[in-house]
Amino acid sequence: MQTSNPHDHDEQFARRALELARQGIALTSPNPCVGAVIATPDGTIVGEGFHTYEGKKHAEILALEQAGTRARGATIYVTLEPCSHQGRTGPCADAVIATGIARVVCSMEDPNPQVAGRGFAKLRAAGIQVDMNLFEADARKLNEAFAKYIRHKAPLVTLKSAMTLDGKIARGTDLDASVRGTARTDWITGEVARAHVQQLRHQSDAILTGIGTVLADDPLLTDRTGLPRRRSLLRVVLDSHLRLPLASRISQSAREDVLVFTEDTDLSRKNELEKLGIRVELVPRSGDNALDLSAILNRLGELEITSLLIEGGSHLNASVLDSRLVDKVFLFLAPKIFGDAGVPFAAGLHQSIEFTNPQFHQFADDCAIEGYLSDPYSG
Ligand SMILES: NC(=O)c1ccc[n+]([C@@H]2O[C@H](COP(=O)([O-])OP(=O)(O)OC[C@H]3O[C@@H](n4cnc5c(N)ncnc54)[C@H](OP(=O)(O)O)[C@@H]3O)[C@@H](O)[C@H]2O)c1
Ligand SMILES: [Zn+2]
Image (cartoon, rainbow, N blue to C red):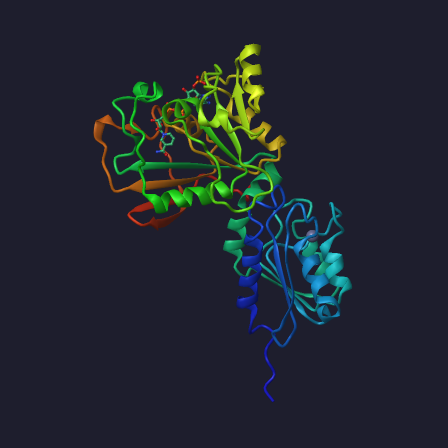
């Protein structure tokens, strides 16, 4: 009789664990997305689980509970290193050991400095075989915001923009016209690319724009994927002089999910906005005469925002790139040229910037480049 090799199914089950982990997107933050699968040596799945913040239990525990006594001698496939410390739940490494699991296949080490390798050490010390790094790149990408947040207490910052081949983000005779709301607001990219923007919003805890964009386009800035999320997407507007119109779509749709950063101390204006369910917070100005972006990111970190999507206009793009606070970009390119009449991607940007690890995507007639300015796992 031919006996099956317990490693035969590794790819299949590790991929399934990753699929489960992804089901936690928008449900786990500020925790990481984690999926787990338990399989017996003959290749039968006896337990599965993925973590959600509200569910509290970690993915490994859910899978172990499902497997019961069938976990003895089995392999657990888990996308993130089992934890070794007492958090809201007991350490998963101890639970794995207690149930008699023989082997752990794990995609990546936990970027949380409280864990970082200690979970693996515990498992190995108990005589469990630990195999690493299957689908590591996918697992790391899934939890890049968690990695940045857990080490820096500030969100992973992604700058998203859609532009023409000549780098224009809107039509308009000039920027002033767009600020006055007289620019045409037709879309740069097509439907398929815009549907992906909704996915990017869904994966984010917060979205940020400048008052210039609100005045020009009157955007809603909501997550319209229809997929479940634990916390509403926090909509953040930088607005030094509280010019946010009460009649704007953002103001009218506010449900304690709009946060305006300002330096304006006009209490009556603040009250009017707060009556609509908008939070208004003061931030200082930084040296370059705009609201202090680093103070804003720290504040968002305090609010447990792990990922921030910037969908700003020309000035905001320039100032966040200049400040070196952007971790990655997702830049859509449409097969169009607007010429001199268009609004530039980043007016007044003082430096040249190169992206690492660029990935190219196609969305029907449009494409996009995703690239990094910093490594979310460093520091
Ligand atoms: N294609 C795309 O992806 C896309 C996306 C968004 C917007 N747009 C286009 O961009 C154009 C608007 O561009 P914009 O430059 O006027 O708008 P913006 O960059 O969204 O907003 C700029 C304004 O935000 C305020 N602000 C406060 N703190 C800031 C800081 N630290 N850095 C930068 N700005 C700060 C400033 O006004 P205060 O001094 O009053 O605070 C500033 O004038 C529109 O035509 C719109 O259609 C295109
Ligand atoms: Zn755990």
